[in-house]
Length: 386
Image (cartoon, rainbow, N blue to C red):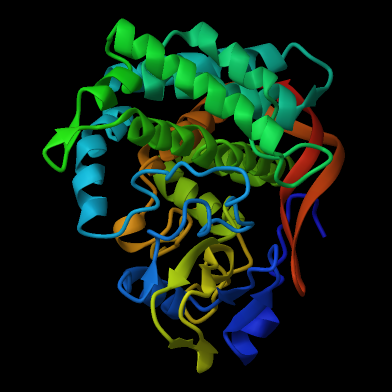
């Protein structure tokens, strides 16, 4: 098996019963595995809510490391729509030509730098800086600020000792508090200032609401983008014919981005809390218990995707759930897509091939399921296009 392959650990359970069971800090979770059931549950916000206790819909639960509600992620309609409407124009800015030009310059510089080296550790020395520097564009703040975020490492809530590290999380929380205070004192054109000037429910957003939005912006788009970029590099290293195909058919790059997101599913799943007794795949779900919408399993459902365990770069029908589904579809999806699209354009322009030298897999353990989400380390050499 190629190092870039991500096997599907959910197939057997998806076919046989449609769900799995996970213990999580004495708050168990029923994992919904089939594409149609994931979509159905995601759409049914009245039964499966996001507006539970802050941190509870995340798997693993974050209730012990935060009490700030992430907005609009942990809200349900109609409140969710009111807050989301405040932000959608801002998060569509990656579609604008000046934004794309700056992002292209950033990623081109990153590729040119690694082309000068005999060996590069992709996760920490390429994907993390790329994600952090691109985030300065999304927040509309100085490029240099990314160096602080890079110093935090690849995870803002996780350390080598703990999957959920409250002390490390506090570094992010304290930083956001300080930045909000700066924006209050000296308003500018950054996201903090825009949020502080916004209104919902007939009033200005509170500092706590702004903080919740910024926590989501920092944490939600961090590991996911790092995984997507790293996995894509590994894939093209082991499939040079795919890189060559994109070089000769750049018109399929947009479809290739969607397919990479489908196959790699950078976020395994996201939870909901039942508001009443219900059923999932004929399995009883008690009121106030948790389910998870397993995007990674749904994206490999053979009832929906032909050859689901293969990367088909020009897949024409691709209703993947890599960015979620229904009203809670990822607000940062436009930014993430633009990063991957730009990366592919720069790779075909500047990189002949990529050699994998060493790797350490990143495996998530979800009860009976052991899912590879990418790499903890990926050592490669980028070879310049002649």
